[in-house]
Figure (cartoon, rainbow, N blue to C red):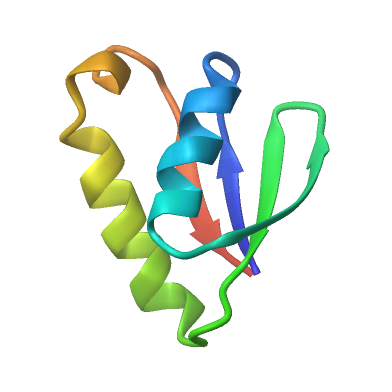
Length: 68
């Protein structure tokens, strides 16, 4: 399971995560929960975080991506 913790633009974060092949499970507060059908959550979380940090529209937003 991969968790994206983001206070703003959650729909945008969800879109990018789904584009990376993650499956949205639920939203709880500021946390978005995703399932990784490929396995290896740690590597996928790092790749997603790197991609999100490189996106211009998300550059000024504080967020975290973690594998659980």
